[in-house]
Length: 150
Ligand code: HEC
Ligand code: HEC
Image (cartoon, rainbow, N blue to C red):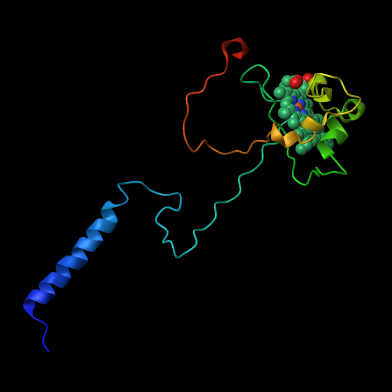
């Protein structure tokens, strides 16, 4: 049986409509996947290089956990070993040349001063983070507190 002209016209307009809807649905918003189809894998971004510098970062506000100015790859932090303390503990800081952890790191939650690092300060990376040479993905207008501006 020959398809009638009417059926053909209906089919074509249906298809066109579907295409238009799928384009309009994004509303100009682009996902982090970019134009990659859902069914295929986007190429991974190259890893950013960690910053490794000699001097500490300036603080942005009072009581900020200082940023880590060196690489920390392969530094073990587990029940048995804490590589950070091998340099930063009061016992080892003099020999390693690293900044001593401050006295707050020896205080328990109720303010009691302990003989060793407080368990709540054991996992250093909870508060201290290394930096990479990346441009910010989103710009922001954050400014350092006035008393710390250079
Ligand atoms: C091999 C010794 C060594 C190890 C291990 C080490 N550090 Fe350091 N760290 C240093 C030295 C030395 C500095 C002083 C700045 C510099 O030379 O990079 C420093 C600086 C820092 C600073 C900045 C202090 C300031 O006054 O601003 C932080 C924070 C820090 N380290 C955290 C860590 C953490 C967290 C770890 C574990 C993941 C760690 N470090 C492991 C040697 C070490
Ligand atoms: C709960 C958050 C927290 C954790 C966990 C923590 N720190 Fe800190 N750290 C801070 C804050 C906040 C400061 C700045 C204020 C102060 O000195 O207490 C600081 C300061 C420091 C300083 C600079 C001291 C100075 O005199 O300038 C070093 C070095 C440091 N921390 C290393 C470490 C290491 C190594 C660990 C892991 C053993 C660690 N921190 C765990 C929050 C934390």
